[in-house]
Image (cartoon, rainbow, N blue to C red; front, side):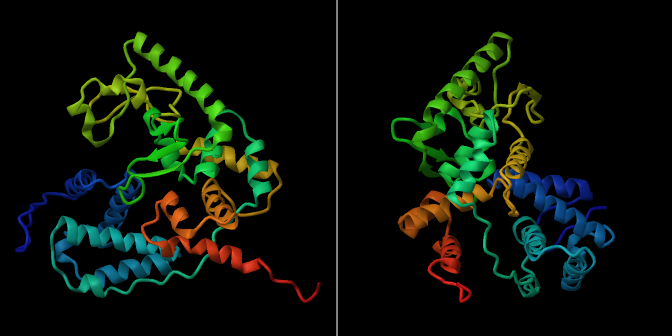
Length: 329
């Protein structure tokens, strides 16, 4: 069935085509793969919840019922419900180009204040010491550079500057580039690791492969760049895969789960009883810099936060216990 809204020229012939079109538009707009997958998932669930009706035939009550269902029946967190609403806002405003005022009036669930879990410096070191190989090196960058796990695994050889002791994070959250610090203490290990990556890459080239996936469609502008060592991932996967878009055999980066599982095991071995994960290293990076006297604006830049208000959460972590003496003592 084909339907056209009077305020847009877009034609949608079926639900799968709608989801594919939304995905394509988000990709061309520079959204991260995680955001794209999440938005497409929520849009699909929203359509299924409403009997697969065309979204332009649905109204405010349909959105509210869906969000209520998520909160009451599925008991999702407020942040998850907010993500679902953001996906629907994208569908109606950015893709369908509608001007439904009621979308702005939909009640958003309020997220309570949550302080991040943070390692002490000794705990962070203990977790890293209980790891080996690539996971240990990756975890060292998470803590030493304040990287998100996805940012760490997307690093390419050219993003690391050993002379300036910096790491350039490209297309971070919000599609922004930033520069952060490269820990001096891991440079030798990182250089040794890159020698292994170089040997792996050259062996791929000898076997007739050696390509990787390039960002920003650079493969069209620079056809041979995907074979250059500087564009290879710092943490390449052990196996090559077929890239869906081009059909080429390429080497991607390792999967996030391999690092997440290694961190979980290390936390257990370190006997740390906190609800911690690989992302705890990033929180610890910020909190420890703050406790060492670095100003909040510097930390904001290193983390890539759009607003300093986001970074201010780490001041609350320190204030919660610092300088307070228990009456029992």
